[in-house]
Length: 383
Ligand code: SAH
Image 1: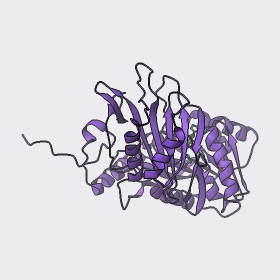
Image 2: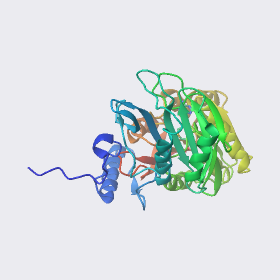
Image 3: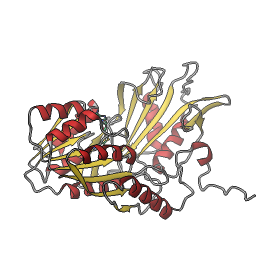
Image 4: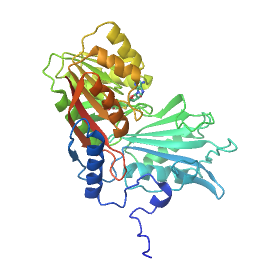
């Protein structure tokens, strides 16, 4: 029997994050294209997938869990679907600086007498480290997720950390004192810098805080947003609804070519960032609302607001019945659907194509190289 070939990643067997790490990149793209073409076959033929030029180290958001194993303190990532921590010290898709910062933190813990949190006993302090890197700005945020609010000699800790990594622009303590698998808790304290980072995408500046959503692959995000705007075919007069808008990125980019943009988003930190982002970028024709996108759509439909284009970018679970029925009632000329899950996209297209729309164009964008995940943009037009 042929021996199993060694993986190019020494952690892949245990980690399971990159299911396709040992498949040549061209082949990965072919598979994704074939999968997408099959899923979208009843609706539209997708254009050729847009791959990455450098498909490694693209993740600008890096998370490490700190905990205890039978052998002592350990940090790394949760093994897929479990609470077992795999001691990953370098990752082929994560930002390399972020990995180096996590390694430095690991090395500082002993001298600062900081104990890893123990999930079983509830004893210990450090639970997670989250790093966000501004791809174009170079700004870096370090979030230390602690089980209780006090970090011993926090100023010296920051000093020691920044001595190794002067590119760190802000450090935040997040307190998560609940027995939960959620990474971040509610309370935060900024211990260095301004508490958020900024980055530029397609020439605009965006503010990113610990909790707000920001696409993890900055290079491909620019490609994605350009495609979404190209599919939107705005002329300068339209009323645009940016649903599931996060920090308002797509809507703010669209606002240059639209009459008016309305954004809706559930996460309050993201909405706060969106409002500030509109201000920074002098996008005066954009308004943001914090609400469930589905409920917001119902109100829009009831009030007979005229919308020309709906841009939607729902989470993995896709949109919901409430949203889609109101969308059909609102009847915009065009819908640009950005999806990070082709399965729920196909489900939602099934509904929309039965309720007044046809899918005109679609394209896959490879935001998650080495994994099975795929981002897709679809343009639908009223029949
Ligand atoms: N368009 C943005 C964000 C896309 S991610 C960008 O490109 O950055 C999906 C967003 O939907 C997240 O910000 C999430 O907080 C938000 N969201 C999830 N469920 C929602 C709901 N029911 N109503 C409104 N927003 C929701």
